[in-house]
Length: 99
Image: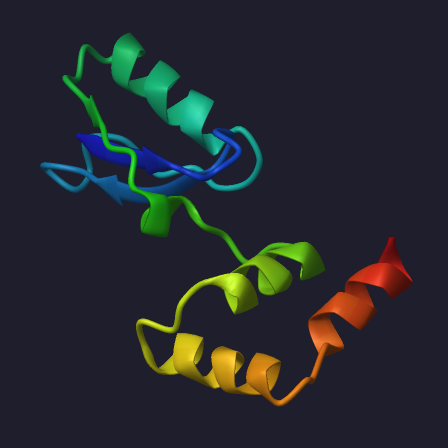
């Protein structure tokens, strides 16, 4: 079993199971802790992988702001960079509105 946590360490953003039915995947808050607990209970070896890209979630408006500030390495990033470069601050305005 290999798994990667979300950036806050609570969620599971990647899960590799071999065989696939070794445990039932769980979802939601604290899924990372629950996956670790399930592997311990069943004696399943596990490897925790921490990657910046995999750990990133788009759960809240501030996540969009963070994504817009990253260099555009793919089409989505390049599109968001073009919006930022044109002076559109939609995500920042939305974040200010909901905060």
